[in-house]
Length: 106
Image (cartoon, rainbow, N blue to C red):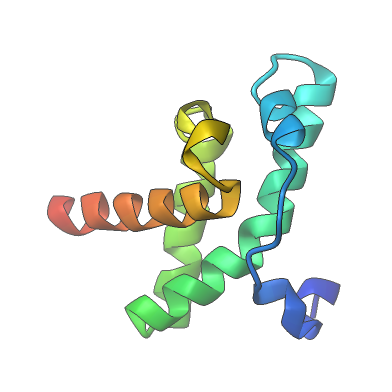
């Protein structure tokens, strides 16, 4: 069991500095590390949210993996805008949007 899974706070959407999000957009070692850090920080909260919505732990993990694969490919992080609110709110909306598209494709 990971440290995150053992910690109930791991399922919370924490505050993220926009400077970290902007760094994650860069095509550099630091940018890739920042993106990996964001994925690590938000993986359990996204899985927890999807587990509630989908009512299936396996489906929640599979959907989370697909979402973060898209995020790692740069498709999600580029649309985040600090003028529109908090990153965690953006990310939750992006997950809902992703899930909606997956359901339409099914």
